[in-house]
Length: 95
Image 1 (tube, helix red, strand yellow):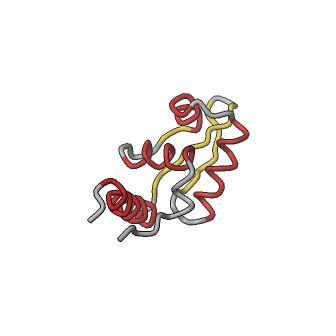
Image 2 (cartoon, helix red, strand yellow; image 1 turned 90 degrees about the vertical axis):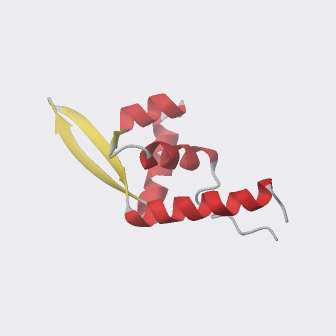
């Protein structure tokens, strides 16, 4: 009846990050931090978990001598996010 939810995406902050990234080509760390209201430390940890799972890619570089971290959702991340949303619907409309 109820489908299993991806525990990696079931975290509020990781789900927020994925929700932001699904709608943009890529996003800077500062943009994600601002939109989610997360602390830099917590956001870094959650982004690393998503990266390790292969759901996002992280590109670190510099812009005007300042660190620049950009995140982008992967094809795997898109598929897992879509499955998560579909499975969540089974909780909203039980048969």
